[in-house]
Image (cartoon, helix red, strand yellow):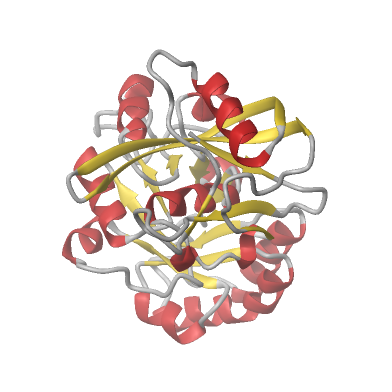
Length: 308
């Protein structure tokens, strides 16, 4: 179990693994192992009381992370602790620090804790631009995307396959200062080199064919990497590459691919349960179904038509 505590300004509490322990020196979200037959909420409350001296009053599930450290497997069940009594203190000698999630370097965390950080950082909505046919007015799309960021969208994919590559990069470059101001992220569809050139605030969303060919994460941790997945093996490959998140599609029948068999809610849930990263539902799903997606273990909803 892992507990994500936020203070009044949104910082999260991290604990450092002490010398002599596995992954010593790395940071993690505080928590510990369940006792046999112990309920998750009960076990997490007990661990946080023993480690930090606080009494948990309310918590909600965030993400479950199945992970392998060599031959040792674990399931890290992370909950957001929204109410507690007492002031967190180090009762077991571990170093503690409060950090804004956006300022945490994932490399400082134990690997199994990195997906928890990404789940905290990522929004519940992931709009993808429609397939706009040229000639397209770059100024019009600059205004539409600017307005989307201004009204609160924090993760947007520029998927414009009929535009020249340089035109898509120019659009991202114009939006980049605004995105940085609002802590928003722009992702170029499949264009790793364009993201490398533009730098912080711009990432890449990998096509499933790209995902299969890559052997390492294509961008530094400061630039987001998403991945298009359609089955459990592709989700595992996204985890191996260190992707920040994935989309899993199609959840339901779509107008654009009516002959592709949908996953359905049961299969979506089963795949998300074994994926050690945040997953967005895509295909035949709308923001109105966000609660249902999150109940099935998803991070949120990605889409094209439903957002524009």
